Amino acid sequence: MRNIWFTIYTGSVNEYERIANYRTLLELLLIPAIQDKLNRDKKVQKYMLMFSNNIENDDIKLFKDLHYEKKVADGIVNLYIATKNIDWNNLSEQDRKDFLIEKWKVLFNNLSDDYFVTDKSEVITSLEELKNKDWKITNSPFKKKVKYNKESYAVILDVTTERAQLALLRDSDGKRFKLKDYETCKISTDANFKGFQLEGDTLTFVYKNFFNAMFESPAVFDLKDVVK
Image (tube, rainbow, N blue to C red; front, side, top):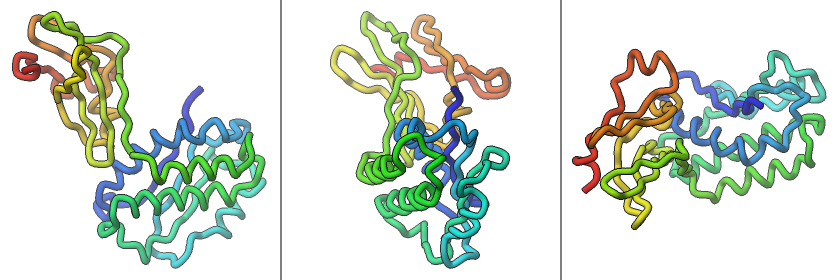
């Protein structure tokens, strides 16, 4: 079943430092945290926070008028949140996390019970827990490992609000070897791999998407320079 999309609309991302990275990473965190607690029968495809610097307070009235015990129009549930008095670029990392989580709590707190398959409080608790977690995801895109010079390496992708990093992790000692850094907000395209090929010392990652394969520079690494 397709994942629900948890996203943030800001207009120009240039006004909010790294907001596109926060948006990408937070969606990856929200999917396992709350998705299964939401009622799929409502046919919501997208929950969205809409940043607005033209309002003093979050527009709860409009939100409830549109969504409370209502059929979801176009599969989208969106809340206009006030950013007029928020200086995002001068907030600390923790303050940014707190702000975003609090706004997601506002959105879900003001939905009617028919949007949930559990008690609403369970969603709010799961959101609150994210505040104090390390906002970092580490996973391996492939089950297959790289076998090179009699050693075995897992391919891993670390995702944070700063950047995403593709690396090799050696099984024998846990040593890590960086391959490439990516913008977190671009991992669904730039790091969209379906597998890899190893020929001699040359490790090549194969894109899932035909257009990436046609128009992106190949992700090719010489392991003689990487593994030292």
